[in-house]
Every structure is written in structure tokens, then in C-alpha cells.
Image (cartoon, rainbow, N blue to C red; front, side):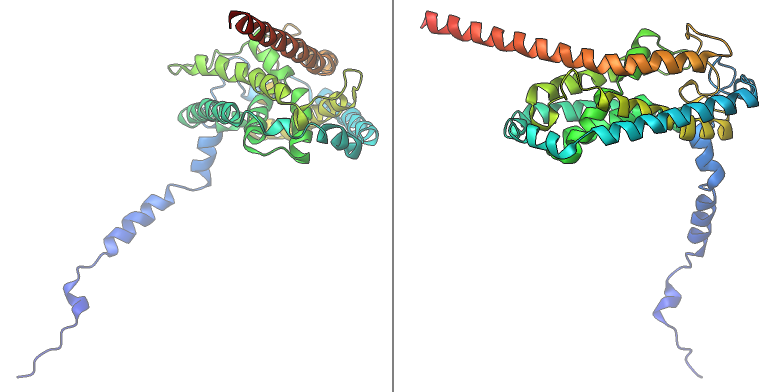
Length: 313
């Protein structure tokens, strides 16, 4: 009799069924599943949310004419501002106060943690409701820029990003004045909306106090505000509008007006171009002026407290 040779591998049970199950699971993560996560939860039944009626709110000829004119104007604003801004001179001015920007690292880290937690909850809501595409709206983009500013050490890039985002907070102002929360149905989803947009003001006000690369341009210098305006309009009328038309999602009201828009009508984008240009140019300067007065008042209060403590001693 011949003894049949048996290998060690013959005692190991076949695991092919595990790989078949994994293959079936992997087949679920295709392009259609990803697109469902991105905008599958956008319900066109909510007014101003999206859908075919929202995408057809404006006539194609009017949409094209408006887009061409506003894109050209935004490019002119960007080019004109870049010609007038002297980065080397700006860096020399802020470089003298660069040491102050390294202070208060504890407060900066705490603010970074709070902003990351708030934005993380908002991202979780977007995944839970399958509306991840809304993270491309300007307020969420500015939130990501502020996270970068709090995590990045003071440098040339930080100065550029800081000055640009100061003049991009008009969206946060409008979101707080005219909130669109009719689609926020999950618990605490509305509360996170207000917390996030309020924190968009808290970060620049804190960084203003640190100085250095976070020092704003002079009040009479409008070129940074003009640059931010051009970038915002170019981002809206190219990327957001094209993506909105492809998905029929009303990204930052590029397809149809919001339910709370006071200029509701076929010319709402023309009105928005005018009042948002003025708001962008003025809002950042008012925020800078407010930070200067608040910082001086804070210093006066500290000096008063110190004098009182000395008298007590």
C-alpha cells in the first residue's frame, strides 16, 4: 500500500467564500454609491433646495449672459487687485510684529479644537443626510481656511489666506441674518448651523489681536477686499454654477433664489452681484474697525485692573 502524501495546506479550510463576500461588499462602493452620498439626499420638494424646477428658474439665454458678464468683471477685479498689492512690502511691514504672533498658543489650539469639532459635526450631518455636496458652499470653504490658519504657523501663506478670508465673511453675515434652515431636520442640526457661522467671526477677531501676519491691511486699502470679491464671484459663476447645473443642486443659490431672499425674482443674481460687491468691500473693513476698537478697549480694561491692583497693594 502506498501512503498518500498530505500537505499542511490540506488541513486549512478553504476561505474562498470570504473573498467572494468581500468582493460583493466592494461592489457596493461604486460611482453610483459615491454620488448618492454626495447629493442623493437633496430633496427637491423643499423650496430653493434644487431639482428641475429650480434649475430652470432662469432662462438659458439670461443665465449665459449674466455668467459671461460677471465672470469677465471678476477676472478684471482679480487682475487689477494683483497689480496693486505689493506682497514684499506687506511682509516687511508685518515682519516687525512677527514675534507677537507666536504668543497665546494655548488659546489658538483651543479655538482650533473647538472649530474642528464643530465642523466635524457638520460634516457628519452632511454624510448622514447624503448632502456632502453642500460642503462646497463658501461658508464651509472659509471654515476650512480658518482651520488651516489656526493650524499653520505664521508665514507668508497665512498672511495671504487671512486677509482674503476676512473679506469673505459676508456669507456668514447673510447666513445669520437670513437663515435657511428648512432642510435641517436632524436633532441639533440647526444649532450647529448657528454655532459654525458665529465661529466664523470669532476666529478672525482672535487672530486680529495677535498681530504679526494676522495684522489687517490699512482701512484705506481696498485692494484685498476687491481681490476677495473677484475670487468669490469667479468661484460662484464657474465652479458652483456648473456643478449645480450638472447635479440640479442649488449650491449657494446659483440656480434659484433662496426662500428668504428679499430680491426674489428673475433678476435676483443681478441684484446679488450689486449688493454683495458692496457688502464684501464694506463688511471686512467694518470687522477690522471693530477689532481695533475692541482691542484698544480690552487694553484699557487691563490697564485699569492693573492700576487698581497696585493701589490695593
